Figure (spheres, rainbow, N blue to C red):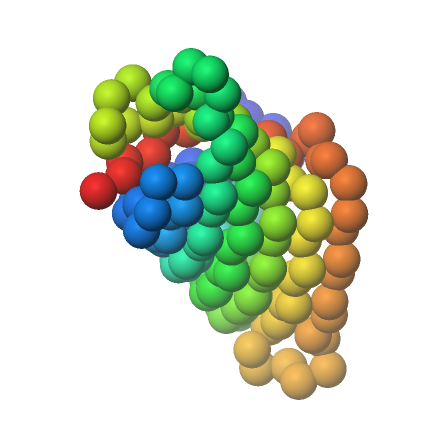
Length: 155
């Protein structure tokens, strides 16, 4: 049995890149997210879909399998929130992020990566039916609470 504060979210964000030169890659990240908050008849369901094209420059170390990178990414996300009252809210956001990170290439195509958020500018519309609720946020700093760890495939 759960409490009214039960919350879970699953996000799947595969990323694919293509090296257009030795140290420069471009690509995109697909963003799929689903979550719920509450239990039973009091449950709120959230879903989101997005796409985030990126450009990334690598500085490889003397071990050519390991390198540091700087990435610029523009993300477009749309979603909906389905609360217990049944008033579905449709939302959207656009973000621009500059992020540092590190990657280890297992082979020519696959890498494991660790990145943190550096600079993020986001414009959000939490309810597309309400014109007066749009807002903008700017984050600057190495946000240790939002690190990412994942795999990326490079063509």
